[in-house]
Length: 372
Image (cartoon, rainbow, N blue to C red; front, side, top):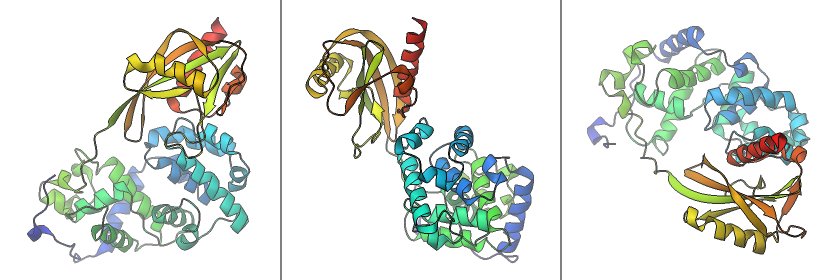
């Protein structure tokens, strides 16, 4: 993206009517056009916190079902704090970015321990909760308690950069700090939570990254990027790195009615502490069988006989685009597995937290086993 020239490094000028009028226009629009999302029907800070964590890097449509199931399983911060990590990861499986689930669990245990399950009402107190940053602290306290705390997420960042035609990288100083100041200046009503949600809703549904719907924007007449005819120029974000392709292979090793899975280390770069079918990264599919045979025998102590190709499963993890080749094996011998691996029955397998691609493999195996 072309860098803005120095003579365009403008700061927003206060209009004759001030931020009160901008906020009024925004709230009028929000009252008419907000989506009826389940977390907007509550003032429970725990439920709002859960929704905000789930919505990080995940689309709203995907989150809704997970959010509702989560609150059925863990309806209070106390019930979450008492859960095991396996239970939490199982409830989260399929949402990805599993560190978010671990942060929720760690945060819940902190809140029970330090606050007796009484969730804090101020942003500063929330900032002491493990895994909670300025955005989450502002979102929870403004929506649940009416705290005058701004929020700046990707949607808000985009809206404000376009409204004022602000050049520069919004993820770095000084512009990052300016955006927080501008967001706070809009909190001039008695409903800062509504203002924050309206800003996020505007960015999500109208002021979109591509082809923004300027014709229905409540701030169209005040938006400098629109007036300049170049709304998509803002925000001036650095170019994203291209996705990195990875080829992996996994072994679906069965012994009788049981199947072998191995637990990842707690500090693993991907899927920490989760259970997977024995998996190796390979240069290409041609290396898969040799690499798996070595891994099964040398690492897990469970040599096996290849039965055939089970399937190819594609999925994404952060910046990686993974092609996973799965092979069916029959275990040879009766050795006990090692290196954190163990045998699981079909009923146990259904209760495990598995990464999305491995869950698809497990479900296919369970379906085929049930029909055979």
